[in-house]
Length: 200
Image (cartoon, rainbow, N blue to C red; front, top):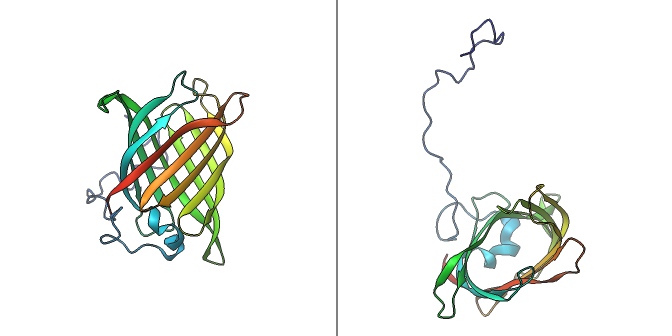
């Protein structure tokens, strides 16, 4: 334990403060509840929701594979969206065959004089030791294209060196295609899926 003599600043001001209540701000993927959508996000409104479906993966795996996926795109009233994804492998009978890739990140429109432009910035991280910074743009309100501007990985992380992602709303479903490069490879198809809205 640190004494007052060892800590010349004295005890921290929060030491004997009362406890705080639970986090008071609601984050939601349902536009009918929670905070109002920030006006800067109107161009991304169709993406907000809880999505679930299936897709196919490939590179850098040796063989193609099928997967199930759930994506939650939510907001808390501020000018950014939170992106959360979890996926699982599927066997030949479409039954779960193991946990797969999880990701978390944020999308935000670039503001000019307080108003949203069609330029976008995003950050994505995963537990494989990779952090990606994206730049791109929205095309209308149903298409988003982003390309990695910078990628960092931990010493033992996956050596991701390039990435681009295309998202679109087609007939009410969320479709995406994700290409990556590893080390010095060219960009190759990594994952793509069609996800149906199940919430929001």
